[in-house]
Length: 170
Image (cartoon, rainbow, N blue to C red; front, side, top):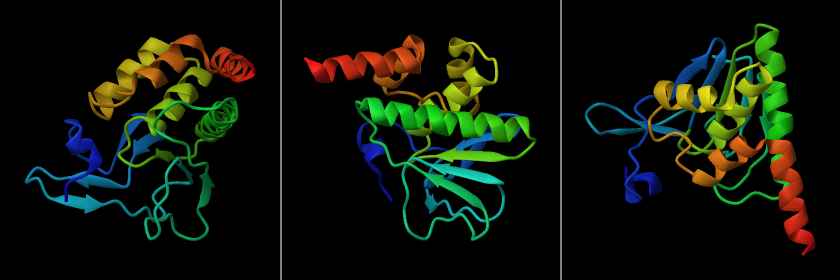
């Protein structure tokens, strides 16, 4: 199964999900094993909270698992979408502080999920650069390959939201 990430020269993830920090996991909706075979990722009851920035029918989670969905593009975000990212990251950070396991996922598990996970780590007290570095180390060097998302994080999501809002006024 060839995906749009492979078509752009970005390798598919080598695991359905990876733990970035204790209790905070990052994943997607497909992965490729060592033989190059693609597999769908179906979430059951492995996590106490699943945050989906992209959803696909039949990929879970199981009924009874808390599931927050806010589909956002893997491209420029509106102020409202950046606000959603902040709210989801806050929910993830609160859940991790409470000892729950959290999966944040998007299509491949690289950019949109990386944006939310990095912001959750910042809310948990991490430096932005450390959060991005650890996401790339623990999920994939291809994580957060969207330079705009890394720029949002470096700027700070609150400031980025204000700047995006100002751009729409001009």
